[in-house]
Length: 234
Image 1 (cartoon, rainbow, N blue to C red):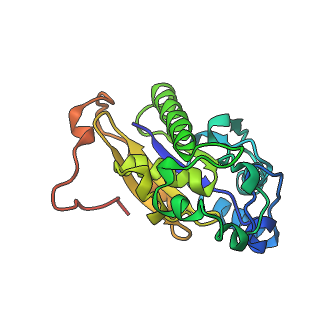
Image 2 (image 1 turned 90 degrees about the vertical axis):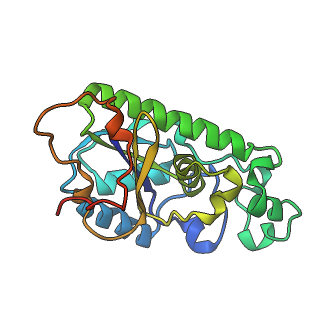
């Protein structure tokens, strides 16, 4: 199956100020713009079959700087969680709310006031990337690489699903601004290839061409390398 690169947007003014942006139209700050340009350099050697994005401006700005030749497709399923009345508030203030410990320890039970359930956010994000991955694989083949630009909690939820861990454990996962996380879905299981990568050569994530084309659904594609394997070719 294809390889998914999850790109978090660059740093925003809200990130720098310690606020919870939510779905507000906050934009990248100077650091975020530099991060976006830098990840574009890292992606230079990666042939992307498809680029999709959250509709929020911080993701679209990140892609405009990182991949100026791309024509991203907006995917509503990748939009930030709707934090309801928490949106736009300082994180220091929110940390005093009774709901805060629940967000930290039992996020699957959280429904933000006037907002979205974290479980619902996770379900629609996972459904979106799995649907796109199947489409990219069908149209471009199992060696295809595609990119989705989204938000921290959304990416963490997708990673938790790929790892087969409960949403209540997703706060253990980190997705920094402008980081790249790589997942390869297969018929039996997803593989987390890279997590929260903010440096290094991304071209090694492109699968090498196969000498003889095999069916994308071959069971061996889903097998893990016992002992860890030799790693990606360099």
